[in-house]
Length: 69
Image 1 (cartoon, rainbow, N blue to C red):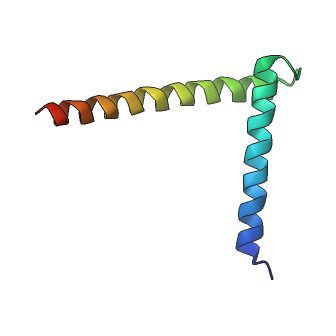
Image 2: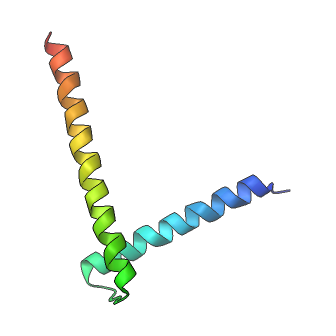
């Protein structure tokens, strides 16, 4: 028997995968979606991904620096 927590988790995973697939399809031009909310969300996602990349690079730089010390 499935628990509500497991079903909710699986549902959230499906929503996340659907969103990721949709975003990739819009980026590649495979899907055209003119909803202005999409553009706002895509801009926010790109900014957040950039922030994470920069943060990861900073952390890796600190780890490398610590290894050299």
